[in-house]
Image 1 (cartoon, helix red, strand yellow):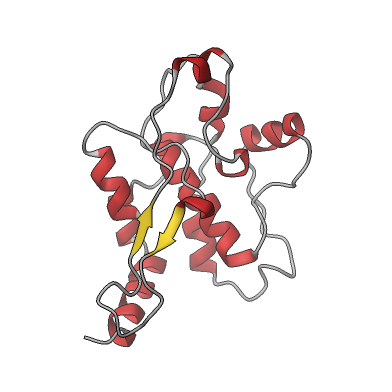
Image 2 (tube, one colour):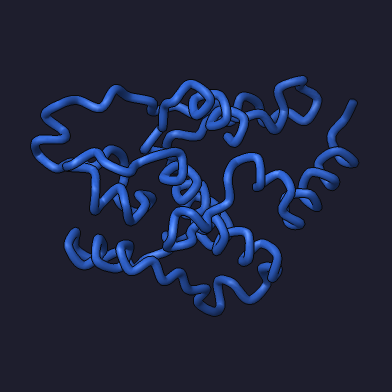
Length: 171
């Protein structure tokens, strides 16, 4: 997913709809050369009527605060929105729930705009401090404080996960 984002970001594009339903594993077979590779789907052209109607692309549970606030004006939106969504997606993958309470649209949007990510027990009791730190750095309220996709690879949690993957994936 980070490789796909690097690719589109290097071309001046953003995905704006990174969420679990847009991530597809190429193969679940550990013998396959494509094992542990993912494809990021759901890339769409932002249409003028989306801007006019103040619609945000994708599921609001994974949308960054600035995308909710600024999408209608289309100002100040950059690759950071996708990294927020990676954090929200990882939160869901590790806990089985979205980062913010599933309430009606306006209350959910207000929670996201506040950007206060919480790790509620018992869902997070067995999750490492490093994993939580990684999510918090991806979902930092200030977009200037969010990890970039390149910085993600250097985070201790990712380095540990990549090392485990290297040791356990067949050559």
